[in-house]
Amino acid sequence: MPLRQPWVSASGGFAVREGRLIKLETDAGLIGYGDCAPLPQAGTENLECADSRLAAWAKELPGMSPEAALNQLGAATAGAPAARCGIETAVLDLLAQQAGLSLARWLNPCSPSVVKVNAMIGCLDRQAIARALAAVKAGFSVLKLKVGMALPKEEIALLREMVDGLPPGISLRLDANCAWDMGAAEDFLGALSGLPVESVEDPLANPDVLGLSRLQAAVPFSLAADESLLKIGEDALIDCLSVRRIILKPMVQGGVLPALSLARRAQAADLECVVTTTVDSAAGTFAALHLAVAVANGLAHGLSTSAWLASDLGCAPQPIESRMKLGAGAGLGFALG
Image (cartoon, helix red, strand yellow):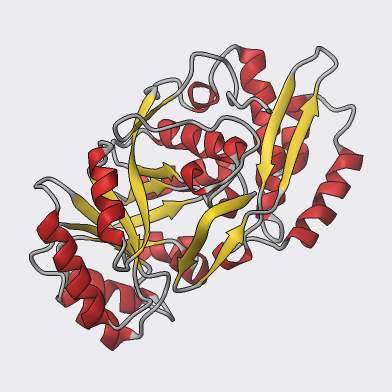
């Protein structure tokens, strides 16, 4: 799926999203869909590895009930998280349809039907100000920007210029994608004083528990771990409370269930959880939406990425004034076409 414009970050970029759409069908005629969209720079396997694992499951799963298929997948996600995510999503789609529930309600009977979402503005450049104003006009109040691709002082100047042109009540999420050493990170974070920053994601190129703890203690807003979560490990980050927020991506965590399990562990430790896509197809975006609804924490989630795609596999959930709402149907809600 080609993008309307390249996705650029300090950890690299891409102009096309590649993957596999998973389709499972029961003898009763139910169809379940899932998205396997590897993105190695985000922490998944490559497409060749995903294909190999999918081929193995294609031999193992036929003839099983959805319940048995889910058990066959197991809890292990190492090696091929995107492939597991695609298969698991399709199985969960079937199970939720059998129960007559949306996937979110199947995961969490007390989940709402609406979540708040942020706008993804892209990299912090001269055109970002216009994109931010367009997002605000569309009803968004939380804006996410990629930073760490220019000198910190240059990006701070752009941020201040942007904030001067934004109305009150707008908050910023900044994602550095592991761009800085400790000195540059301290300089950048310290220069954010007075700006409406809600969080800064992955500030350190070589993150560790002590370094992130030191940075978090020095700022009033949340530091968030995405790639840092993979580099340090879930247990270390949660046990040491080095940051205040973690980023959940079904494609990276190996599916909705592992991501939800991680969310519950993090919430028990009083950590914030934000669900984001990896710029997935409509099927993957639906999976992330159901996860965000099931997490049910009131935060804005990073689900509004379908607009970056020039083409898609079906109709993706669309934000209306910074909110996404689940449909009334059972299962995932994705339809091919």
